[in-house]
Amino acid sequence: MLEIADPIFKPDNQNSVVKPLMMTHGTMECRNLTESRKFLEEFLGMECVRHNPDGMHARCGMKFSIVCIQTEKPGNTLTILNHWGLDVESKEAVDEAHKAAHEMKDKYKIKSITDPIVRHGIYSFYLEDLDGNFWEIEYYDGGSVHEDAFDFGDQYEDA
Image (cartoon, rainbow, N blue to C red; front, side, top):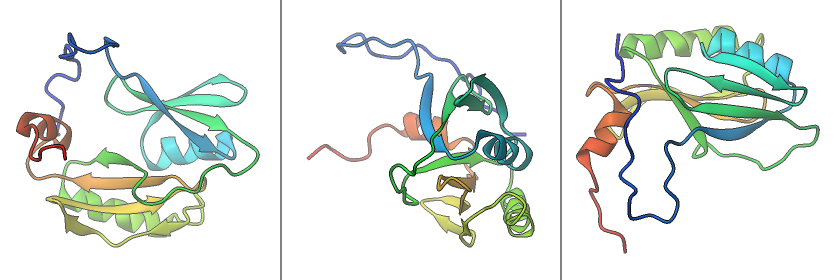
């Protein structure tokens, strides 16, 4: 099973104005926390905790969580470019998740599912959940996309 060697590191930010210890969370909107939690836990395998009547935290494998905020009215319309990525341990695991997404589309109110393809060195597919959030289920043959992205460093100069 693929594991992040050290999910915690000391940030190199001594020259920045803000000197954070770590990035702790991001947020996404949900229409119904009960239904969203079932999808996050049962389908995506995330751990969730409800911390207030209109919010919960979801996490998977690192000290970073997504704060899910229940909202009555639709907010921003998201596109596939605004997505959350979940690494799995093999290409076969991507295919199994893709098959399961189609089989369980109605149960979890999944809105759309793309076909798996290789893009930027990653084998993956995307799905849109009941709240309009996009998820990329991905396998990277090089180990960890997260670690490699930073290990490789800048590949392009800022314009």
